[in-house]
Image (cartoon, rainbow, N blue to C red; front, side, top):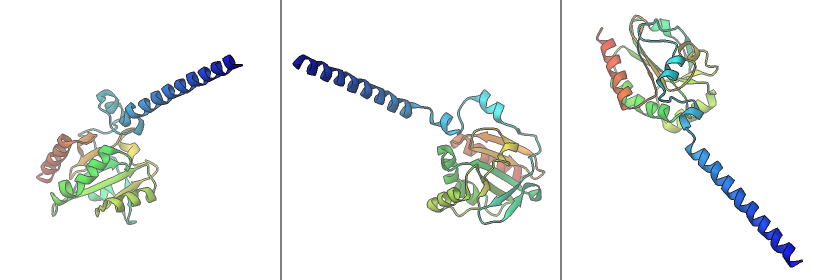
Length: 197
């Protein structure tokens, strides 16, 4: 009888150890899983990014009408004569959050009084989600909604953030996927050069 009990305890201990090892492996997989790939944000795989990019410098920017959070509607083609920065983003995307944090001071304030129109467009998220995020972050600039991704799908098939600078003639002059200091500088240069023409 005592031998049976010892054998059962040993079996239970082995099962417990096996479950703990499995649990640790699962936790490690979650921690080290590539966030960008699973979250559909930009990854540094040039071939993949290229294959998902539908517009390039020199193309005429596909026209769209976007509804802003305040209810106003903006049509891209009605902005001819102005330089436009379109930025596709999402609340869950860390590089998008970086770009949005930079938007007011780094772009809107920097080019205040110029012919620049900034259109940050939330890709694939509900109005309530975007409103809560904008309110929480205290952003005062207009934000557009692309709930069904119909606007985004004219420009790309995957990955955010995506920034597109469009010149006064409605041509794409710069496209970026992802966000970092270098991209921020390149966006600034593209806007500056477009405003000077």
